[in-house]
Image 1 (tube, each protein chain N blue to C red):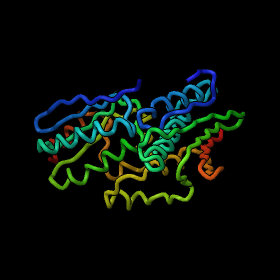
Image 2 (cartoon, rainbow over the protein chains, first blue to last red):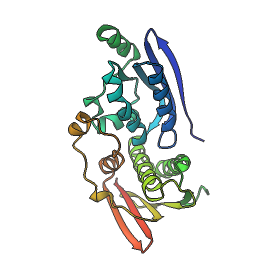
Image 3 (cartoon, chains in turn cyan, yellow):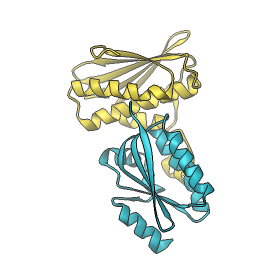
Image 4 (cartoon, rainbow over the protein chains, first blue to last red):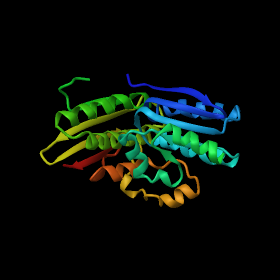
Length: 117
Length: 139
């Protein structure tokens, strides 16, 4: 059984989500619930770390599109990092770097939040 | 699911997408396809099945989807059969992604991914209530 999990840590005001497993139309609701909870908690500076994500389909991509505008409107952002080539290819194929900041390393995403808010 | 079968039948539920992906992966790897091509086919079949589950069967899992792999020397062909209202992915316009992101649009990215990753997509309405979607990857 393929599975999907999210582990969560904080770095100051920044919340970092570590995705693990398979993000598809079945599991994407878990990520939606996490974003909903973080917004309720007024956590708007979010980093998503993809290092342990094995798979993403358009349902997973759709979750990021569903929340990015709302989070940016309140001064936050969702920054993405540490994608394997396999995962990056899916984002890249559709041009997601036009809208999202995608970093090779998590520390660069943290640095960007800390220097530009 | 028998390992030696080229066909699986799943109930139309997103919880069965993992089984479809594992089936396609096993078939692609046994044919010796590289991981990049294999991943592109897996994602395309997932997107096709997701659309059928969501839009045709509206998450009612008393419906079924049949996925069959047809092997030939120069192509990897996946045939997907399902009942209900069919749709032809070829008739769906690929969005302008600059406009898509500028306007924070949501959804509609499954078919663009299928079209980008597969060499050809065929849709046939083969019986009054039976649809056939064929995803072809040229090798």
